[in-house]
Image (cartoon, rainbow, N blue to C red):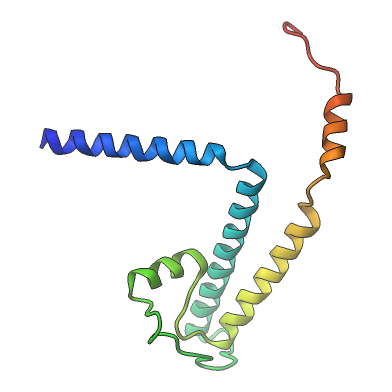
Length: 139
């Protein structure tokens, strides 16, 4: 048992170090852009699932019972289906209201992200940094 625990600790430490060293090499701008879009898809999936729950409670119209059925290509019970369901809200047989909620969330939050989260041009950022007085130690 001690040998297994030691091997597990070594594998965990090695994978943590590899993850850290890999993430350090990614430019921060790219990292935050990708994570922002992943969070957007997660929020859209949560909105779609909320619509499904409200539909089951007969509080929303269905706008079409099953728009499509992709369970033959990717079943929700498969590992890949569960991962996609968790990350982006994949549903093999979505109702119309779920699609409306998903698209509305992507458009609303994505539009706000683009409008409010604009990146400053590099020249302005460098100029702003150069014009700021540097603090001396002890100040």
